[in-house]
Image: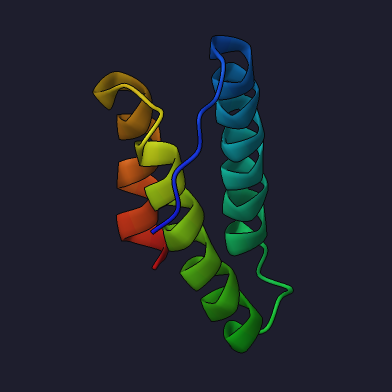
Length: 73
């Protein structure tokens, strides 16, 4: 386990980056042109990024992605 000290501004920026990455992966998971193997790989990565995001996000913000992770994986 690694620890990091971040300023409020850095936390907000990391929060933003993680949200955008989750949104992009959700779009990719809905793309039927992608192979099942690629979509599974994206779903595994989504779970990792989701857990990272869960450390920063409020429960209300996190709920936006919880439903999607369960239906897309």
